[in-house]
Length: 410
Image (cartoon, rainbow, N blue to C red; front, top):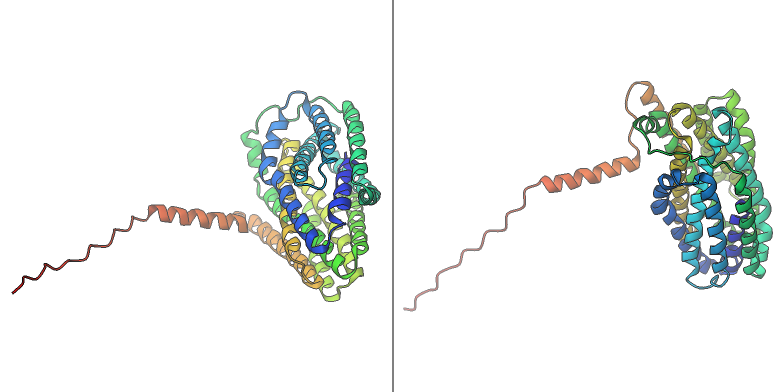
């Protein structure tokens, strides 16, 4: 399934992105990001509850999404260079997100103990990273020659994925709606703070990815971005390999704080040094920290929400993280920043996330409520203003001006 995703990206990279001038490429990538944000903002909240209780269990969902993506790729072959491509990309991303939700929810049903969840998630992420790093290059080269071949390969891969999914269990992961105890646990202080930190980690990765795409292509050429993309994949793989070992000696909170601190320091150091080697190293470090932080977050959810349905919980959080990645990628697509400014912003995101996480943790230990996030503050301000306007008495209309009586003629 991961290699099937890479087939679509290879076809798009070869036929839509790499063959365009930088200015034309910017508008195409921006449109692609807007299209890809829609499944996470609109469809993802409905996907989780729907597929939680679908008859036939997760195996049926995986098979349906695999067949659906094969059909979408078949339609893409004839519409790679016209406007119909974008609705098809949207459909493929919806199916991809549905599969990701199902995969996250399947993990608890195929491990023997909850302690194995982090290791299982690590292995799945490692497999996806290796497949993506190995497959995207050849598929993009094929797409440069003809966009048809990567899509045909993707159809074959999804057909194979459909057959492999027959070995998955039939269990329905969440046969009932979320109970009150589950909702309370998923809103606990530790999980809320960790989720906020992970949102900013994914935002820093999304921002850096598209910042490097346009800045490196402009100053160093497309091959330089390929090197940075390879470093990103290697960083994710290294983090997935090392994170389970770190968890054996470090608490999850320290792992998460360490990941944020590394992003902050690496971003600020890169801003002062800049250059192509620095960009490649920063791509490796940020994605490494992202993998470590994600597995720390998974462990926090497993520890602090024992009564929650793990599959449903991970699916809900993954939608938020993916949306943060997409939205953070919009500014560097809209306009190219100098390299050092982009690096500085990455460090600023990491520092802000670390400070807010530590401040929130300190408040919780002191028995105080979790400080509201920026989004919550903005929402409350808007709601307060709306209530104030509704409660204010309607302004009385201005009094009519007095009119003089007409003068009598003498």
